[in-house]
Image (cartoon, rainbow, N blue to C red; front, side, top):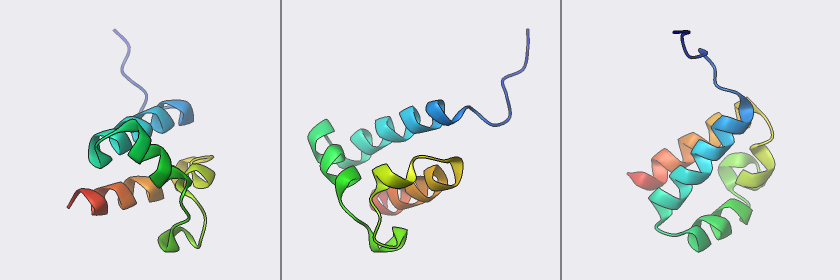
Amino acid sequence: MADAPANPPLQELQVRLLEEAVRVLGSESQAAVWLRTPKIALQGMTPNAVLANASGCMKVKQLLDEVWR
C-alpha cells in the first residue's frame, strides 16, 4: 500500500477548509457569507480569494481556528 502524500493537493485542502468552515460556523449559508466577507487578517481580501494557493489555505485555516476558540 502506498503512503499518502505529505502535502495533499490544493483542491483537497480547499474542500477540507470548506467543510471545516461549515462545521465551525454552523451552516453552509453562514460559511458562504464568511467566505465572501473581507477580513482584516487577510489584508482586506476574502477567504475565497486567498484559497487559490496553499499559503492562502493555511491563512484561512488559522482564521477558522481563531473563530473556533
